Length: 65
Image (cartoon, rainbow, N blue to C red; front, side, top):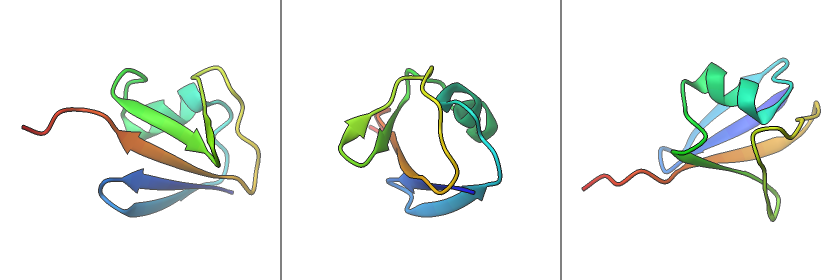
């Protein structure tokens, strides 16, 4: 299971299998240009693989004004 924390919404989601960051973003309906994907203190690019048991933060970087 991969745990995803959506920011700034504060929503927590789990996925049985996501594979890559790109696939995770597709599952979330997000584009790589509109969010940051963070694992610990590391920013992840869309080609990085996600492993079971990991927690990542998906932080929106879109303007809300």
